[in-house]
Length: 236
Image 1 (cartoon, rainbow, N blue to C red):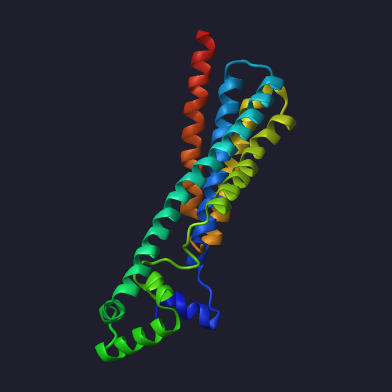
Image 2 (image 1 turned 180 degrees about the vertical axis):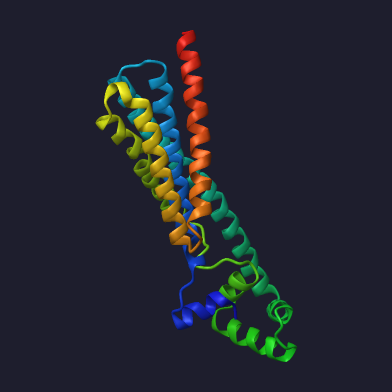
């Protein structure tokens, strides 16, 4: 029996259970802050009015959220299709040769260190209860925690991107027109630092390294984008 099975029996929770939603939340919010903040800095560096900067940022939020949702839905749907294909194949194999499948499951437990006779007994009992579920989890690695949910992933990506993108947009609303670039730059980096710290805390990691990592790459992306905006704005 795997650790996931034991967790369900005894109610013990682990941080690894957060991987799915934590990845989506951090990726979406991070992308929202960086892409929208970079877009705002690019157009602001080209000497565009504050109203136009805000309108551009809103358009970037909407387009980015839709892009994130569509991309996540397509990618997770592909994972879901693969899972269903594997489960259908496993179901056929269980029907065609259940004894072979029971021995196959037993050998998985033997490889984990269980004695052969005990492994066969465990496989027999698990398959008597739910053969497909036993093979799905222990042979294919498909469980309730890891199973693909395309619609949920798409909505979560769009929502977290929008939350992240709203942060630099809020800075545009409160920043003086002559200090728009420094306010958005510093504020966005502070938001990125906060996101890195929250993600690290939720994932049970140390705070310093993830926070520095997120902030550094965010600063690099926004600085590069603002530089390009300034150069091409002067050329135009």
